[in-house]
Image 1 (cartoon, rainbow, N blue to C red):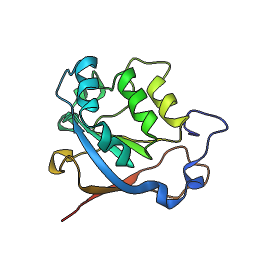
Image 2: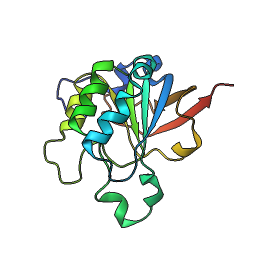
Image 3: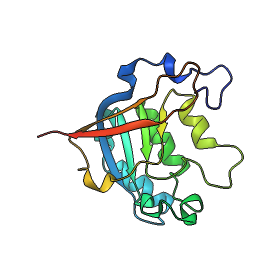
Length: 160
């Protein structure tokens, strides 16, 4: 939250348990419309309530290392953000560089998530290797005092 809010919590003020928990994955097709996003999330609404982390696979990480990675990446629509926030997960993970469009000046998705103490984990990769559910996720950041962001070692553990 300190990332955008002067009085927000820094990462070192979160319990380490806030960075670990059960997760689910949503696969969003390229150029998925807002209506299609809402429909997809509504089909798994009961699973959302059980998850501490919601990971969004768009396969945008395939563009890593290319100029394209930094432009026109997919973002979640306002309605889906509202749906996610209502479930109060610990975090939302993305395989893109940001939760907001590249041309934003308001960072609305960042603001909405962070003001609810929902972490944003960006630049994830290999999400295609995960099942849609049945796994835990951890994203423990470097412990740096008063940090508003930090690298993490993102790890998923698939239940057997």
